[in-house]
Length: 224
Image (cartoon, one colour):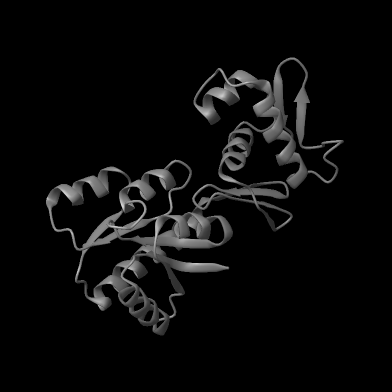
């Protein structure tokens, strides 16, 4: 399932009311009540943006945001009854896109959500780059082959992204470790597993790859 907006808030009645209001204006929306539900939801579904409360029962919205920012730039708007400037600064410094104080006006919140969704739509329209029958949308972390989306996990996408940026060039293993993992001391096994998974999703025959070529003793090359 794909939603425009996911609300993460343990104030169930407020979350339900906000979702119902958004749906009246064609913004698809649902909600979860805690961090565990949020992480599970994002693994199983897609959302264009998050509305994140700070005070949650199992993990704070700040901690959720930090974890999400390790692999995604999805817009996160904090919604909270906490009024201090320090909370606002923390929210923005860890990767939040905005901070809306409770109690909020549904109409103003909807306006902020729509502005964010409109901006994302423009970015998507201009961020997709194609080469042959393969294209990549860096803004949404999506890869397409023959017009069909290839479902990649965050690390798989980063690996493919780097290969795509350096397509038709030999990329060394050390370079991939440094640029994708941020550490030049990972084992070859880690890289081999991710390359195999990429091939299984992208190649017609993963056992005889035509795109992601192994350059023995050196690294790999994405041939397009």
